[in-house]
Image (cartoon, rainbow, N blue to C red; front, side, top):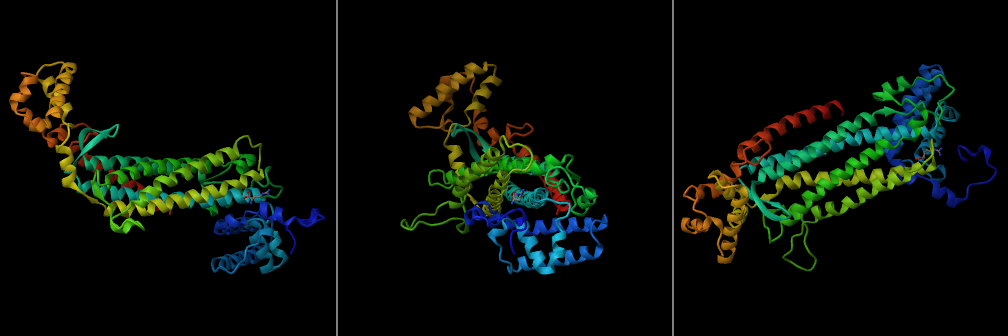
Amino acid sequence: MSKLWGGRFTKQTNHLVDEYTASIGFDQKLAEEDIQGSLAHVTMLGKCGILPQEDVETIKGGLNKVLEKIRKGEIEFSVSDEDIHMNVEKNLIAEIGPVGGKLHTGRSRNDQVATDMHLYLRKRVVELSGMLYELQKSLIGQARDNLDTIVPGYTHLQRAQPILFAHHLMAYVSMFQRDIERMMDSYKRINVLPLGAGALAGTTFPIDRHFVAEQLQFDRVYENSLDAVSDRDFILEFLSHASIIMMHLSRLSEELVLWSSTEFNFIELDDAFCTGSSIMPQKKNPDVPELVRGKTGRVYGNLMGLLTVLKSLPLAYNKDMQEDKEGMFDTVATLEGALQLFAPMIATMKVNKSRMREAVNKDFSNATDIADFLVGKGLPFRQAHEVIGKTVLYCIQNGKYLLDLTLEEFKQFSPLFDDAIYEVLQPETVVNARNVYGGTAKEQVADAIKRSEVLLRMTEQWLEEHQ
Ligand code: ARG
């Protein structure tokens, strides 16, 4: 069979043009959505009296047959049929004869492809939110097990103040919560139906767009037909949300890589999530977080790529827009790959609590609290800062830590020191002194965990409603 649009042409398409312009190599991923959209469209054509019911039934039967064959891998897609839409239509006609040619009544590939993309991304956003939720559960589980684990907290990657390891993990739970909320919010703009916009201007047939929307469970239809076929904001939004998720994952990855080094030795990733070296028998490499860190680049690239494709495009559809797909598919696959590994990798990671404790005991991260102690005795903070700075310098020069100093040594720096300082110096005291909402005190972190469980329930409910 020749091209579906061949009527106006007098020559065969150059085979290089076929190959260059075809999208079937990648848009076959949209086969299910394409047929789902066509089934709703043809049902509407029947309901509006545009096609006789008999034809509608024949077309529906044919579409289901084609879908079945695609699922079984029985259909060989052809490059000369350009894309998934025309491949499906060709196969439909082969299945049921010329009546299959009535399917495309009142529709264009421009509103068809946009509809497929909306259907596709709508599903992925729910799936990915579910994966983020699983990761949050793993992090919260580890946080619960580490409510008494104290670890140095860093700024500038220098030890700053001791914190609960649970508090550190819960910071990531907050980040992923924002990611989930961004996904939920974008769903509102994804769940809008473009079909019925035709090529750009609408259609002469008396179609019912709202009926199609209802069948496909879209909340709304696009207001403007030009916008409907040329809008790719919903994909850009997804790619930017995905970029932020990858950025979050890359920060966690970097910490996992650092923490599992011999130098830190704070955690050990389970053997099942690590790889070895082909030459150095002793090695256990954190390849998964390293790769996630690395793959962040391609997701950012996909966002920049599509922003650039769309820049300055005149309305309405332009073939350039076919370039919206591969980056989106690649981003979905990259995110899914990372998230499905991260949840179990975090759940199974071993936390080296004694090593973390050792790190806390051998540092100066309690210095701020000693300064605060002197402030409590009436010394202005700026002077207290100076006094403790000198005390720390003395420790460094004498190979000691603040916890090792005698009261006499303390008194060399200020007469305001007394025995109570030893209680103030304890890492537990330092941590629990930060008893403000959102702070690292155990009571606060336990509350934060409780609040996060409420958020988990909300996500569960949303996931259930959008399955
Ligand atoms: N394969 C095309 C795409 O993905 C479908 C729309 C084609 N429309 C057209 N007018 N050539 O963008």
